[in-house]
Length: 450
Figure 1 (cartoon, rainbow, N blue to C red):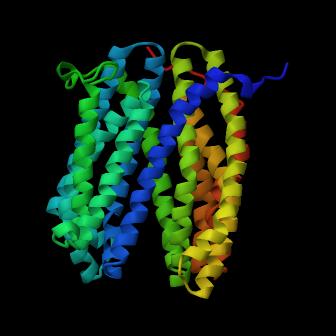
Figure 2 (cartoon, helix red, strand yellow; figure 1 turned 45 degrees about the vertical axis):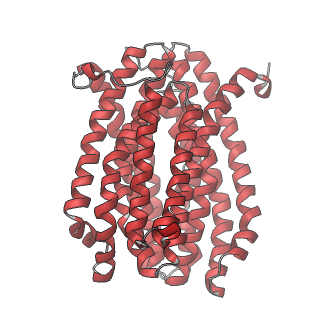
């Protein structure tokens, strides 16, 4: 008898309560980057460019933190499904320790050695000087980010996803409003330009951290047991690192790969660079939907697997696969629908506008692969601790196919801009058959709890 997926109200209620707040949280975070670029672009082009380069430091930090936070969610969801709150707290403490060490290293680099960090990305003295001014202030926010991300992760696991969206959205609104106040000197405040953007970010991170800490001491929430914060659980630490290291490898593969794509476009001229920048913003906004479903669906599947209900977890996984394909086609339709509005809104040269239209059409089909792979790999596979597959698939599809082809087309074969851009989108579409083959093995149907 065919399963009636849309009639299971319990499944849909759980999924929506988890996925919708996380999607909103992703959308709000993507809005900050757009607001920063828009406001600093009104100051000077150099300010916008310097801050764009300087924030690559945080992008690298986030790749490490993503591995830590994702592991908290993966293991935490399984132990929460098992109703083992004590072990969930221990997982929280392990994640906090690793996040604090990571954040401290990036803080020291940004505040005390900002010139050396900027030299990695540019040799233009004007940009280096502006970037140093930004990093010396923003570096303090990098110290707090890892801690607040751990708190937000454990809130999602413990069925408080809506509260994480409220906190993140509130912090984003504060960030955007203070950006305008400090950058342009509104309401009597001094106009601090790039330092103002950094100060707005720091203030928002302080508010966010205080907010989640206050939440954590309310009934039904989890706060770290300080007596256990520095107590090492050897077996649980082994499980944590076994899960986190492949995630870190995948995160680094993905991050460096995407940075390479931007570099290829940068070598194809200012028109290609401008079109790619706009297309990337639209892509990140549309991807918020699949990111929310991946995170929410992963927690839902993880709860069932950790509770020992493996068949139910498998059933939820099968449903999420169907939802992934439906969401992929919906994302394609959204990309095509917004293309006329995006090209009409931004002011670019005629050539850049043609590139943007072509990129949006290519990306519309790319979104099918991106959505399906994100939900299955980052949601379903991760829920069962199957974290190595993501690293393997990125090594083969991104670094074995997409990056070499795009590099060859850019530097040796002089391919047209849109052909090179299409090459950068091959990895997601091309690995769908491999992902589905691996999915059907059901190696991800595992109870990770002890």
